[in-house]
Length: 104
Image (cartoon, rainbow, N blue to C red; front, side):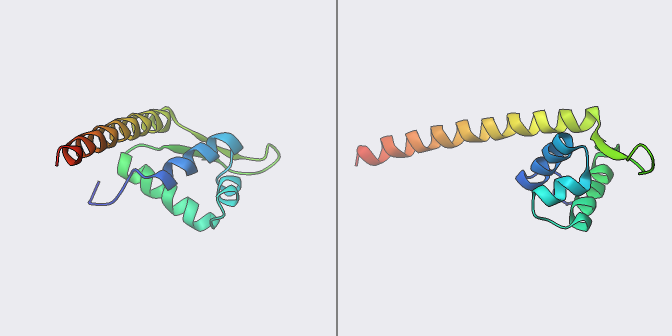
């Protein structure tokens, strides 16, 4: 991934907002970020994954919009799993630290 971050809370929230709103623009507004920043993040994720995470349709009579690909949904699930493993590791580390400190 060329040394660049693919995962992060902000990007995962952006994907969730795109899923909820059906729009990169609406997702950006919901997150109080510029459309350009949101689009750049989506573009970076698309490039890093080697496959689209968001598919967009142009506007027009049907209105266009954006939707997550199956790759994006898998990415979100894997990120959630990593977050849970990290939380469990922190909990275990805190218990270990407390135990060591109470013996002193």
